[in-house]
Image (cartoon, rainbow, N blue to C red; front, side):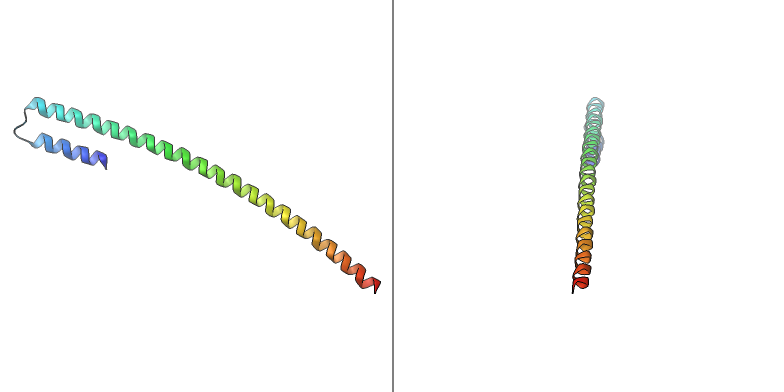
Length: 96
């Protein structure tokens, strides 16, 4: 968006008939430099966002792994308790 604004400003500056060729050249050079700076800033922002997204993705993956492990442990514990309960019930049934 900034590139479009800068480009439009440069075109407006170039379209002024009252400007000399040197002024037009300077305006074009300024516009080109601003566009290059804007492109570089956009690239840096994109790289930073990509890096942050990768970090968030890694954190989510690690968290999901921990949750999966906790679920696995919880189901193992529940299965053991269920087995114990079945054994206890079987003992109670035979004892009566």
